[in-house]
Length: 485
Image (tube, rainbow, N blue to C red; front, side, top):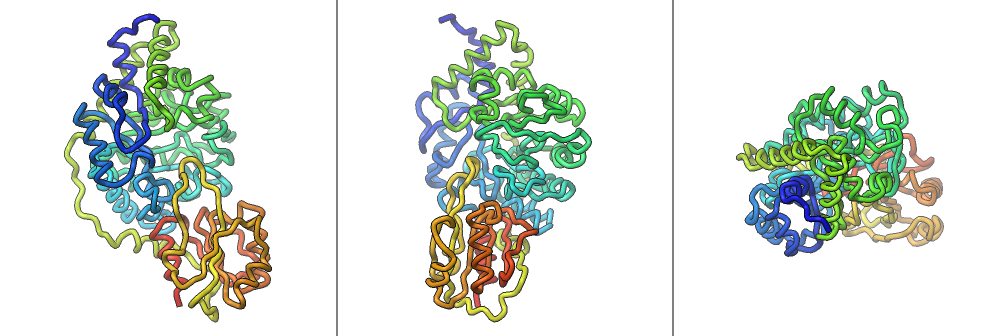
C-alpha cells in the first residue's frame, strides 16, 4: 500500500464527521481526533445521562479543543438528548402553528443552552424545508409549516436563538426536501418542479437562514432535475457552488447529510466515492453517517487522497473545505451571549399550538378508553416514546395496531364510554383511517392527531379532533388538558 502524504491525510481528516457507538469514545476516535479529524456526530446511542454526555464531550475536547461535536436536536420528534423520554420542547410544526417567532427564538435559544452545557457546538437543526406534501415520510412535523413565508420567519428566529448560545445552527436540507413522498434514507427522492417554483416555495427559508447568519447549511440527497440532472443535490456544483455560494452569498460551512444514506451512497457507488463527489461539488464537512468505525474513516481518507492524485478532486478545494471547518470551530469557541430561559415557555407555546375542532360537550371523559395506534417512525426520528398516557392516568390505555383490531371490539371494550383515538399521521395509513372512520360513525369518538395533520380529513360523525402538530411531551400534555373534565 502506498504511503499517504501526512499533510493531505490531515486535510482529508479535517473534512470528516465520524461517529461511534456507546457512552465513551473508543481509542480509535481519540487517536483520530488528535490527528485532526474534524469531529463527530452524536446519536442517541451516545446519550445515557447529561453527566455522562458532558464527560464524553470533555474527553474529546481535552484531546483537541477545536473538535466539532454535532447532534440532531431539532427540539421536536427528532431528538437525541431525550431519545428515551421524548423532547421537552414543542417541535417545529407546533412552533409554526403557534405563530410566535419570538417564542421560536426563545425555544431554540433554550435548546442551544442545553447543548452548550453538554459540550456540543453544532446543532444539525433547524429543518427549514417547506412541508408542501402532506404525505412526506421524512419531514412532516420537522417542518415549521407549509407556507414559505411562515417557515422563513421561524427559520430566522430559530437560527438566531441557537447561535445566541454559540451553538452553530444548520439550515437543512438544501435546496428543500419538503415536496417529496420518498425518504432519502432509503432511496433517491425527486423534486421535479420548475425553477420558479423552487424560488417561490423551497428556497426562501434558506435565504432567511443565511440572512440570520446561519453558520452551516446541510445538503439534501434529493434529485432536482432542473438543477442537478440525475444526481442528488449533494453532488451538484450548480446547487452548492452556483446557487448557495454564488447567488445566495453563503460563506459558512456546507455540511452533507449522512453519506451512508441510500440517496447518496447508491448514487456514488459507496460512501468513500460519495465523499469525493460531495467535496468536489462544494461541500466542506462530510457527515459519514451513524454506522462508522476506524476502517471506514481510513477508507474515506484514502479515497479523498487518491482522488487528488487522479484528478477527481482539486487539492485547493480540499484545503478550502478544511479551512472552512476550522473557521466554524473557531466561531463556536467564542463566548455566548444568551440570557435566562423561562421554564414555562414550552408548555405555554404547546397550548397555543394545539387546536380543537368539533366539541367535547356532553362527553364523560372522566375514565375514557384511550386507544393509541402504533405508527412507524422514520430513521431520522428513531423509536422515541410518545402518547397521552402519562397525562391521562384515569383513562384505560390500549396500544393497538389498526390492522389487528376491529371497531366493534373496541366499542365492546369501551362499554359505553367515549373512545379517544390517538395516533400519528392517522390519515396516511389505510387501516388507521378506516378504523377511525368506522369508530367515528358508530361510537362517541375523539381523535387526537399527534403527527402532521390533514386539515381536509375529519371523519363523519367524529365528536372532536385535536391536532397537536407533534408528539413531544408538552404537546401531549396540552392535548390532555383539553380532555380532562
